[in-house]
Image 1 (cartoon, rainbow, N blue to C red):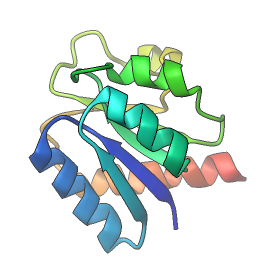
Image 2 (cartoon, helix red, strand yellow):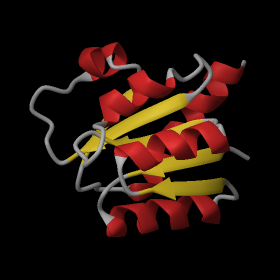
Image 3 (cartoon, rainbow, N blue to C red):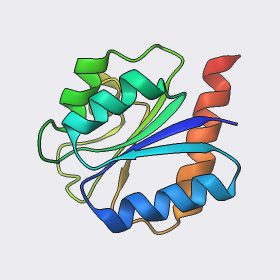
Length: 122
């Protein structure tokens, strides 16, 4: 079981991701903007996170810079705006993967995040 933090300013995205991660047996905490995400990160200490790039307060990359996650934390950045994001730029921001919104397959996010987290643990 992972402790998963979901930080996104879109309520539908937060709820959808929360439900699918809980269905897979994970403990989930959500935050609606970057500033709340920092507070949630510090208190919850997640194993993994799904973070929107563009949000009020702090952007996803600013949130990651603020919390300085451990190298074992699996992080997926998500955004409807994919212009400048690719695997290399995503890794430079401290994340493991970038997935464009809207999602074709929400289950893919669960499996990718789980896969990344498990590989970092071993």
